[in-house]
Image: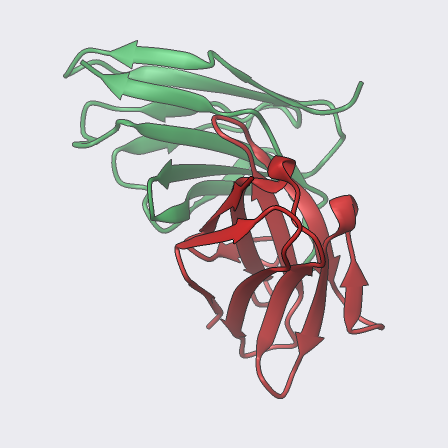
Amino acid sequence: AQSVTQLGSHVSVSEGALVLLRCNYSSSVPPYLFWYVQYPNQGLQLLLKYTTGATLVKGINGFEAEFKKSETSFHLTKPSAHMSDAAEYFCAVSAGYGGSQGNLIFGKGTKLSVKP
Amino acid sequence: DGGITQSPKYLFRKEGQNVTLSCEQNLNHDAMYWYRQDPGQGLRLIYYSQIVNDFQKGDIAEGYSVSREKKESFPLTVTSAQKNPTAFYLCASSIGRRTDTQYFGPGTRLTVL
């Protein structure tokens, strides 16, 4: 079975500081991993995803994530936070094969605050 | 523009009433999904459909029903059997493979009065 754990329900950083949002996964099959962002009262938007190939994945808005199989992690980073990065971030892993193969299992989310 | 639309954006329901949330996509996606979002709970899967005229229960299907008569449409009915329906509801669609991105609509916020 697949699962996702996001460490820290709230993270606060200063503008210009490094952003690090942690995600660990469990998967019985080769994992495909996703990061989504949600602004208040809106739907989710894909930031980046890992399927195969390069383990360092670059996404939109300057975010990137590194797939580390040995650590079962897919942490999201951004070198310098902007006020506009304040949002909730969700990590997700693809379900297994079969009839639910397109399904995603989401973590509980991390709310990022950016202080001026 | 291709995308997913949900309506209404806000919905108020009296106890004992059924309500239907609309979800339409023009992305030509085979798969569609309904999620419920509560603060601190992440997204929980209610129902999903991989193909027209077929759908499957997700993790929290009790008190909900769906239909998939057209590829573009996947309406969700919140029935009176759902004891705590106040939540934010999100619809998504994808091609349906493990590597595929799910695209989300803007959501419907349902409040029970």
